[in-house]
Image (cartoon, rainbow, N blue to C red; front, side):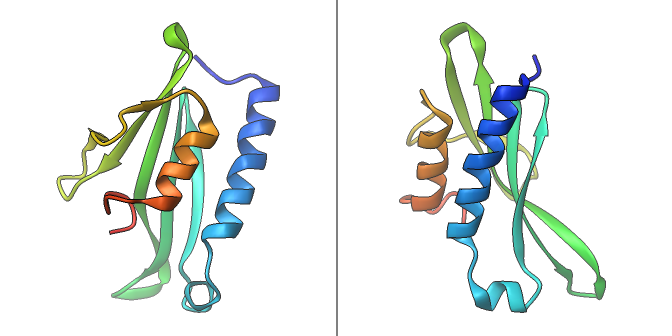
Amino acid sequence: MSFNEIDLKRIDKEMKTFISRQRTSVEIESGVDISYIIEKDSIIIFETSPAWDNPEEDVEVPIARATFVKADESWKIFYQKDDDRWHKYEPLPEVKTFGEFLKEVAEDKHGYFWG
């Protein structure tokens, strides 16, 4: 499933607000930033920063993934471990809205997303 135009505009608006709240001036000055991509029915949030061995090259580190499940109109939440695989976010495996997903990632009460 792909998102329709209205969904994409809503997601983009919510992501822009989320990113602007998560950015810090210190991180931006050091070349660290936050972005996202959409892959089919998932939104992946990631952090970009200069590679330690080549500052001209950016490295992308996945932070969180939300996958929309049309059957029950919910969003499944995932985080990535050191094994580079996505794992179900056990404290809250699914939410009803994309905004709830972003709130959970921003708060990161359990240290799964931002470390």
